[in-house]
Length: 299
Image 1 (tube, one colour):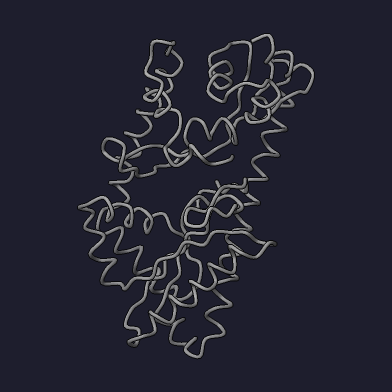
Image 2 (image 1 turned 45 degrees about the horizontal axis):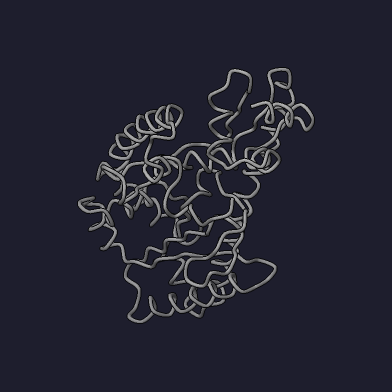
């Protein structure tokens, strides 16, 4: 603890990852010392939101994880640095919001360029809606390098999740859209100036209706994405119809119930981590601290 206090006295308020590095501590012990001490103030700026995880009971957990929240979204300081802690927290919040906005703008620009240059652009505008989802819709995107899953290429933080919902498109046009987006995915990934990961799915409105049954894990994920997603491009009237379908299916209420459970589980997880000693099973402990997917990521 003396080391942590000494670093904070000399360097002022720090983000969790900065503190862990400066103190040469592993992330878990740095989090535990800061969270469990009355000598240290922490200010969390992240928005916690529901993530569905097949490896968790009832599929409900909060994002960001405890580890990621500490590393990226927690400002740590001493009681007499309260003013500086608030200043650093405001700057961090502004940076996160800016990253999210820029990623949405890039996604809109990419989709717009692809569609507006297509010979069937008017038809696509009328019968297709593009929805942006993921971290950015919560103003929670980050730009820390991480490996892209299929190639191992380092990309700039949060990916661009785009859902393309179509209705009554002529045969073959869905395939053309898929080809366009696949090439754009490659371009964004390999362009040294961008290095962004684009994830997309193209589906007909009839599939949306089927997914809103919410009766298996994949349909639950798809429904949650549609409930949270923001309009990006294309038909606004189709977007409004999709949101109405989501509401009629009762998805927002189901999500709220799952989120309440996830909040309770987070409180219990944090209590368990703070009380843990060397007798605890390390793998079980770390499963509370971060997700499997985060283990190899750089934050």
